[in-house]
Image (tube, rainbow, N blue to C red; front, side, top):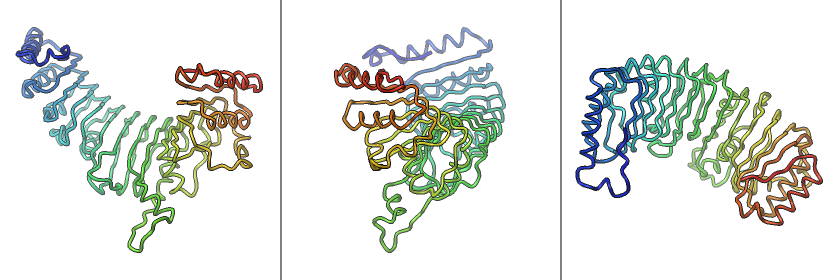
Length: 389
C-alpha cells in the first residue's frame, strides 16, 4: 500500500484521511488471516500512531517480509518491530533521524535474514545490538551510520554473508579508535568510513568481493607526509590500515575509491599481494592516481583523467609488461588529448589485453576524430577497441 498521489493532489482536503481509512479497511477485511508480505509507503501528514498500529497488526499476523517507506523525520519504529519471531526480510527507508530505532535494546529476531536500512541515521551501537539479536542474519545494509566521537566499532556475526556500511555520519570528523570485523562467513563487503586508528580484529577469511572507501582529512594526510607541521601538531600515521588490506588479500573482486588509494599510498609502507584478484575497479580523480595489481585479469577504471601524470615518460609501462590484464573498461571518456594518450599507453603496455570498452556520451561517440582514433587502434592492435554508451 502506498500514498503517492499525483502532483498537487496530496494537498487536497481529505486525501490523507482517505488513505488512512483505506488501509484500515483493507487490514480489517483480512480479519486475522496470516500475512506474508506487507509494503507501506507514506509521507508527512499520515498519523504516526496509526502507521504503528498497521505495522503491529501485520507483525501479530506473522508477516515475514516487511517493507517500509516512511518519509517523516519525526517517525520512530514501534518496539514490536524488533521482537518479531517471523520476520525474515526487513527493508526500511525513512527520513533522517538519530533515534529511529528506540526499541532495539531488547531486540530478538530469530528468523531475520535480511535487513536493509536505506536512509535514516542509525547509531553504530544499535546495529551492533541488532547483530547479536539476529543469529541467522545473512545480509545487512546500513546506509547512514551515526558514530559517537572516538568510539570503537565492532561488527560481529557468524552468519553474515553480505555487508554494506556507510559510516560517514560521525558527530564531527573524528577517527574511530578501532574498527573490527569478526565475520567468518562474510562473502561481500562494501565499506565506507573514516580511517580508523586501529583494526585489531579482522576475520574475513572467506571474503570474495570487497569495495572500500576509506577517507582521511587532507590536513591529516599532509601531516603524515611531513607537510605544514607545527610544533604542537599531533601526527597520527594510521599505519594500521595495512591490517585491513592484508585481511582482504584473498578476494577475487576489489573496488577502491580514490580516497582509499590516497590513504593507502600515504599510510601503508607495504601492500600485500592479491594473488586471487581477477577483477579490479578503481575510481580516480584529478588529484589522485591509480596503480595496477599483480594477478589482475579484468580491470575497470572510472574517469581516468590525470591518473598517470606522476609517471615519467621513460618509466611508463615498465611495470605493466608482465601484467596479465585481458579487459579494460573506461568510463566517462570525453575525448581529450590526455585521455587518448592514456588509451594508447594501455594498448602498448598490456601485452595480454584482448578487449577495451570505452564508455562515452553520444556527442563524443559521434566525433569524427574519436571514431578515427578507435578505427586506427583496431587496425594497429590485436586488442578489440569499442565505443559504448
